[in-house]
Image 1 (tube, rainbow, N blue to C red):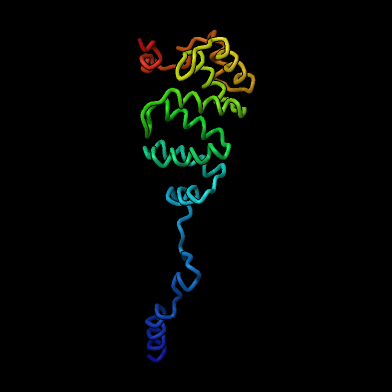
Image 2 (image 1 turned 90 degrees about the vertical axis):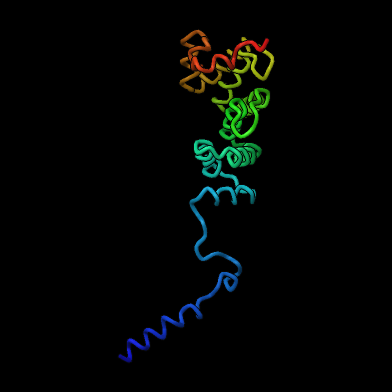
Length: 181
């Protein structure tokens, strides 16, 4: 009986003896570690790394375009070309903002200039179509060739199709790439 009473008293006193977060310097005893909220907190604190930047893909896929844009912008400014190509895709399709072919082409150009094969391929398509940038079919083909030389399979496929844009564009998107007049 005495042991039970002692144990009960100790358990009842435990909350009073526990340290608060404030006692520990303001930290959290159980911080968020593997959540999208934590990723955004890190990004807003200036932390960009490959894993953090790749998390934007999940945000886009779940429809959280505002956070994805914020994350990708921070990562793109830090030099992550994958973030640039995602921003291009988001601007081209109006995800989280109005459709903006000019911004899409600019993001692809920046990724291409940084050496990214997807950026080269996408910028090549923009040049060939004249979407968001002045049309220059020869420069576009050169960009596709550069992406293919880096091993990008879809660029190699386009070369084999004699640069036929329909080879890489779903029929459902044809309206988007037609003349605007």
